[in-house]
Length: 496
Image 1 (tube, rainbow, N blue to C red):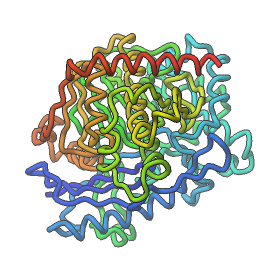
Image 2: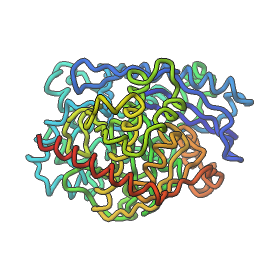
Image 3: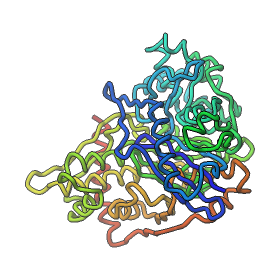
Image 4: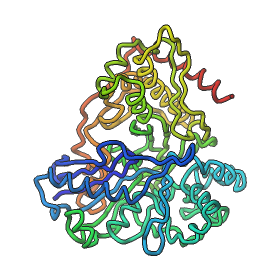
């Protein structure tokens, strides 16, 4: 039997086909081959067309099937991972009413801040575990105020993964994990938050029916099966937000375990076995894939918006034309640790939760025209990304989350030796790299949801560790010294 995993990211849609018995990925593909466009009609805005995600998915599924030595009828279950916090709205005909306001869009910050003050910090944090902040509920409040006629036409709201599942199955459903990431979920009452729905004036009927994260969430329509090259009735049996799914992909399920990603944005995600929260909402708490009221498993998520997107910007606009990422890393490696006093604050991709939703933009500090060149900027950018991880991990430590080992997929920024060594050195953590990705994790999630695997332990027994990066004591002091300079420059920016 074979399993199909789909990862709906903001940069591309990735698809993997996994052999259930061996646990190995036999084929994968992604589309578009260049980063998918993000529309920014105004500063701080970020939108994508959900129908584009669907078209990307069809191309990626076709590409994966062409590479696989199996037929589409051999796929026994489908799992979906998706970019978190996005808002998709449809009418009764299931037609998209407007572009999706995606995760890095900052327009809703004032709505979340007002909700926090009005509902009350104590009530928000004890029930929602977060400030409404710049999350999905606040984005819907923006639509309600600025697009009232469109708002009246909304039949259901969805997260990106819910939309893809709707296109596959014709059913509109969601999950507790999804509702928690949108800040719609009351953890104390284990129900939709009455406080939030009443404050914003949202009709309860806007929220889809709830299905388990693992389990039947719909079956592939005949017309869609023909489009995708799959079998009618193939069940969709798993969905989760990308960072929650990444943790599953790395078999991070229990308290004390940590997962990380460093794609367009960067995330450190730790599982907590007790209810806790950051009263400044700099890091956020959501329901993990195995969370329940009686057995809490909560994901504490540190998100940094400006990670791979900064490295990509450096490659396009600063580095020599035509350079690839390996060559960019080699260029950066010609410069010593600390980039000879040059620091980059990598916060140019919207308001940063870690900075209490401030939008300070990306900036360079300590630039000396007689010393620094492209190589210095390339290295300082990667170090600045790493230092933002360190800054956020210190907040997680304040919450009682001890981070000694980080698990990550061998992809994106983790392919950079500078990034890996700097992260291990400045944080003092061991980094374990695994041969997996979000789409493969979603495929195995589908296997769990379909009952093909009896447990997550069985599903991820084949997970392959491919590298271990340990802190280099000789370099650690240099990285920590550079971090102190970087942090001082950040603090000055935050007080302006």
